Length: 319
Image (cartoon, rainbow, N blue to C red; front, side):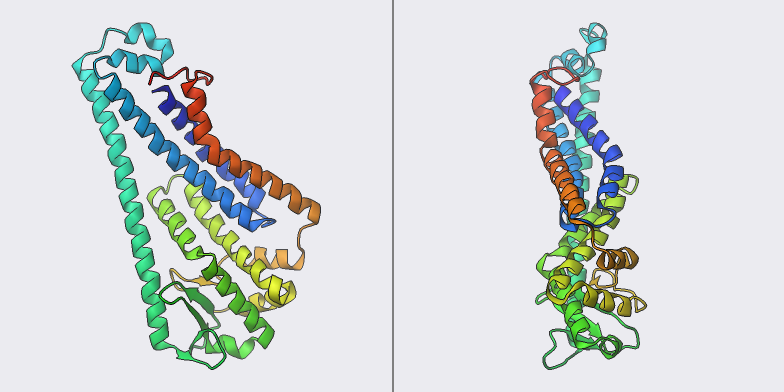
């Protein structure tokens, strides 16, 4: 039970302190790929802590079903003298109901998450299919062209994946800029960014009061755009990517479920393309994000081990 308590306290600390720290480290987009990893590690660490805590709670109840006072005393050492010997069948039923509720809540959360991901996947595939049907192919262009007065370029995951460019965008982009835009969209598809966006958006929708998930969803979307910018810049140069970004910045909004070159954080992305961070800053931020990610990934395991060995402030676990 103390293991479950420590895991819940750990998840609370990460959920409260994590967003502010991560925003500070990832705001400038110095290392966007590592930033995405850190945000995902924080979200996953909290969810894993919840699941593991529920599992430990269930195991504790099964093992000490006939000793409810012992269950409580392992969590609340200060109330040991009060708890021992004063709990009967009602406490047992209450603890069982609490555990069942926690397990049910996690099951509902997992089910809703799975359904949200399935809906997002179906939506993007349908959009890609409709784009191929409604658009037209241009020889030598790895994209479907929509005849539209708005400037836009985006990709939709499907079978196969589809990159869409409007006729208005083709009119204003030169060849190098068009190549940069296509590289940007290919980077989204190659990195399976649509899956990460669907996952974080689903978590934010289901847990709207937790800043870790709502802020995290926005930050991950912004950082993924920066990752795609960097991929395009490695081939076509930062200035070319910047020119394409500014050319399309006043265009049409990106459809829901699609990923576009001008979908998120245009100003911040333009600033980092104009003035890339210094090498010393890049190394420092990379080191901090790497260390934080490792800590978040191993956090639930370390917390459980410390609690079980009696080294944490929660007290030793009776498993």
